[in-house]
Image 1 (cartoon, rainbow, N blue to C red):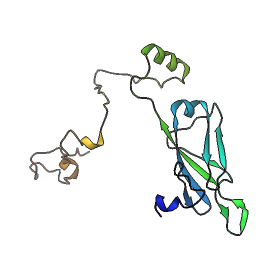
Image 2: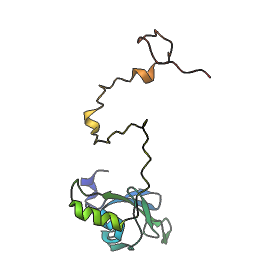
Image 3: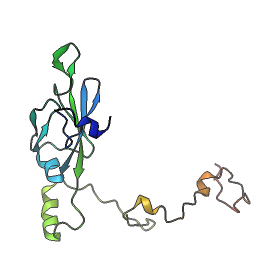
Length: 169
């Protein structure tokens, strides 16, 4: 059923989309980082036309892609309309863009958050590398060549020339 045909139904809300599985309803909801860390309230229009305020307390954290449940706010059971399924909400946590805060404020923020894990001990034979942004649409910088992983031959002089051999113990 497409959205245009659903608009005929009086309780359809094009703003909020629900997916039904049995008597349970599923929805996605976007929240900001502040809401994810500090609690929130949001209003939604249920399929039966009611306005529902969904609350989550301060001090409890919502992780990206986590799911929470509102018991008894799903669809009514067949032949037992007073028993309802549940409403499951999956959260899409929106993070701020790069450089959204001054270095001074960032230091203050870091002081308020739980401490970082200890930095690894760097020795003389350790190589340091930088993590960079990656755009899936740009592909791999190696030109997509993956023959080294697909070639089962580890004999010298194989189809791609001399290769790395496994060390025998």
